[in-house]
Image 1 (spheres, helix red, strand yellow):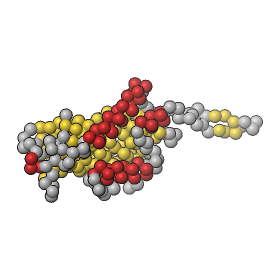
Image 2: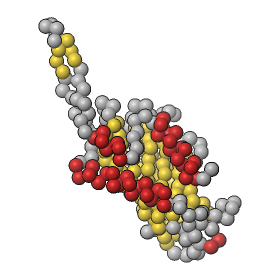
Image 3: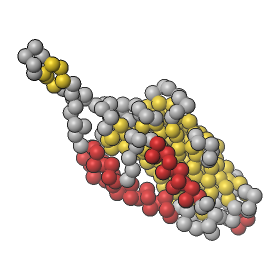
Image 4: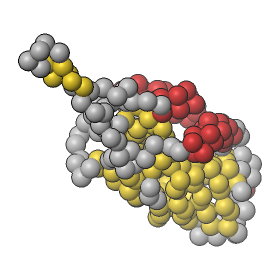
Length: 247
């Protein structure tokens, strides 16, 4: 199975299991009213009163952010496809020296039946061909979160995820294989997600024009862990991908 097919299958399974997460531009439509659901308390006269709606602390996208949100997701989809467009890079023929910068996106799917987030941020990675090392950072995360009323909302996340201890090696078939660690904390104003783990992937194209890596807590690729509001439970879902193109 090609890595793109496997990625799609895994993402489909995880996103389906993570019921609070939405995908694509259609989720932005959920950023409107949360329905103002209140609790009705019967009175002595047989009537009732409606409590005020819960005031959310969630960092809901501003009008400016929301206006560019669909375009942001479209760019992510384009880079995700283009990053693996070529064949895996031949380790023996790649340049032996120099530094290569890759620009793209990191996607994080995190959560459980109560709290969840499906977010995408800008990612920049540096690959040193002389030392075969990888480093980088991801920030500016936006995506779908569940507010305290159980409504899916498009929100932005404060925080940075660092990419460290990365290496590029020659795998058993002579192609470039890479791996790196990630660590960071993201806060949407309502919940904090502390993420860490290791992603594995490949450079693609004759000139290493694309980069793709994935990690999850499913035991299939790399490993991932997420702590939500200080709690680390075995039922949490955690998956991370990085898709990038040579800058």
